Image (cartoon, rainbow over all chains, first blue to last red; front, side, top):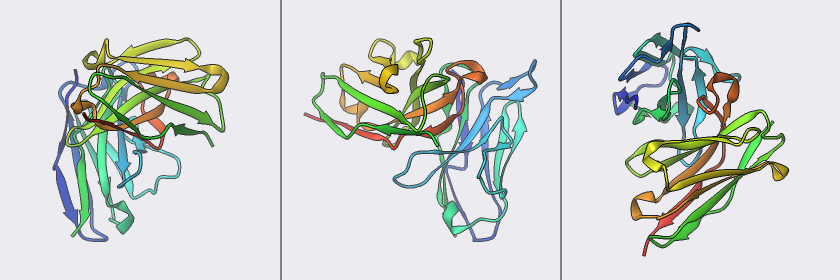
Length: 113
Length: 123
C-alpha cells in the first residue's frame, strides 16, 4: 500500500497570510507514460463531507478559489493557500489514486491564529 | 448537478451486519464509479472499495476483503455497501463518493460525496 504522510498535523495561520501543507507518498504517484501525478487534495469542514479542491496534483476543481494551489511531483506535494480566509478553517487531506488501495493522508487541521 | 443521497444513521450490535445505500439524484450512475470511504475517530479517511455500476466490476481494499460487499441497482441509481461481522472499531461515518472512470476505473479522485451515514456499533 502507498502510505501518504502529511505535515504538519495542525497549523495556525493569521488571516491574510500563507498556509502551506505538505504531503509525501511512500512511492512515486507519477504515471510516467502520461506525465501525470495521481494525487488529489480535499477540504473537510466540520460536519460536512470532504470537498475536492485539486486533482492531477495541480488542477483546481471548477469553482475553487484561486488562492488554493497544488504543486509537486513524484513523492512530494504541497497545498498552498495564498491568503487565508476565515472560511478556510477545515481539515485538509491528500489522496493518491495511482494504485489500489486508494489511500489518504492523516489530515492537517488548519486554524486561524 | 449530481448529488449522492445516503440512508440514515444506524445503530448495530457487534457481530451483526449493516447495509448503507447511496442514491444518485440529478443524474445516473452509468458512466461513473462509486466508492465507499469511512471516517473513524482518530483514524482519518479509509477507502473500503468501489464499483463501476455499468460493468458491475468491484475493487475492495484488502483490509475489508471478505467483510464488505458493494452492489448496485441501476434501475434506481442506487449503490449499496454491506459490512458484516461488525465490531466496535467499525463505528464511523461512512461516505459514498463518485469517481471518474476515465482516470483508472475505480481508481480516481472523488467528487461529489454523499452527506455521510453514521454507523455506531455497540452492545
